[in-house]
Image (cartoon, rainbow over all chains, first blue to last red; front, side, top):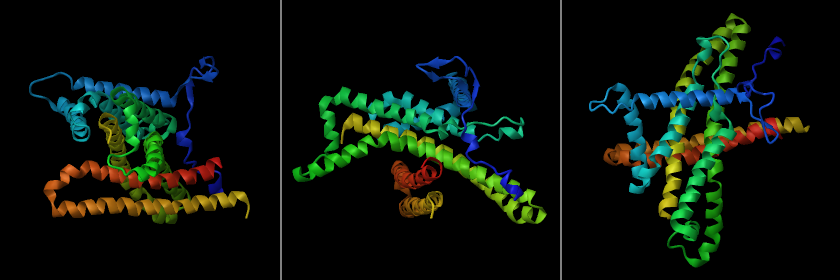
Length: 264
Length: 75
């Protein structure tokens, strides 16, 4: 079949390619070339910087931009106030940064840039476990440091919920320990898989559109047109997922911080 | 049956997990909507719990996707 040669590889979009610096940039034997992943992380950081800077004019009557930034900070402020209480105030900078960084990364990765400039593809770096795993470990380390700093060795009482009968404690403590240690994995895995699955789905649907059009007008009508309509719907769903996953990451981080602040 | 086709069948079977997670996520949002319509005043305060339930149900479906990806590309 002719279709075999021009098969669309849905995993190609996740390939990390060095842009420059692949020759001599090494740390301890590992190459640290400036890759497309690095580039899009930098773009997300700069876009976030500009977005927040534009809203920090501290006008008494806020304009549209300041209103947009303040609604985001207010949203995170409410999230932490509801989940952690008044001690949550000092975690607003961290949760806000991580939420906005993930949100910008997810949304930038969905940009249809090839429509504007041929050959330029956005790279969704949140679809790599290395990135989301580091973000999750960051949240986990904050929980550990705050927990041990504030409660000392008493932090281990997190594994025995208040009011557990003694015979049950021997069963519950290992379960609680495992569920505690699995947190960074589930936190990073959720974001990475949700983003990756969505992008694979879009790629597969687009390959339906392309292959259907290549197979002739009849197939184009019965395969490509419905696939294209579905793709528009899935794109809207992906924008929703981008927001929800960033929110879930921030929400779960704040819940874990609540555990560290207040134990059970 | 050779190992390669067994892997692909296993990856296909893992897709059942995605459907199961769909039931779970639908149950979370459906129950929320049902109770939110009964008591709209209490609905806004429970949105955090809604998304915790959503995240927990969704994670298990995503794990099925990971199993499929591991079977196809890693194993």
